[in-house]
Image 1 (cartoon, rainbow, N blue to C red):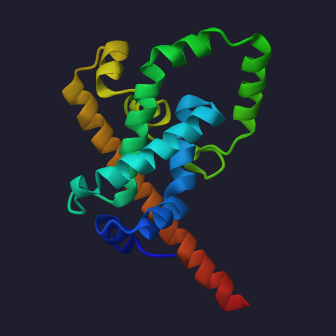
Image 2: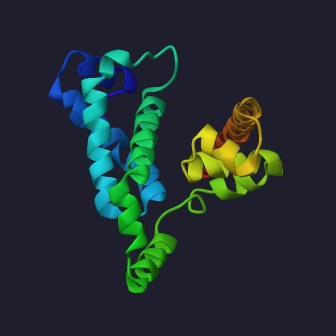
Length: 192
């Protein structure tokens, strides 16, 4: 599997193999982000395809100095998903679902992989409430800063600062967990 910088280079050189490699490397994770926001397999697949098409068309705008390629892709996906939820067709579709469809999708959602499966829920719960609420709204439910402001009446600057602080804290905790896991694996492998 090519590395991130190799995938980006292929995409910038308009090599279709780069698109394929990007999809193989990041498609599952991007689909998960989109599905959590839209809760519709069909729509999530459509947004996933649109995400990679938009990445292909706009790869010239990607700047590795500003962040990882996956982060750039996930931002595209989140924005497309948010745009889709704001569309009249999506709103009409969600309003006209039968109770059976709603119950079925709710049950399927509860059985789908989620943050509990990767231990992230515990890490998020360790955050102070003022950060946890914003992480939940912005990253797990896809609200924009403006929508969070409208729902919470927290100033947008404060929202951005708290999200930045929360992400920094999450990175620190996850880094510590990864280090602990690596040490444990080295210990276990040394015993075998």
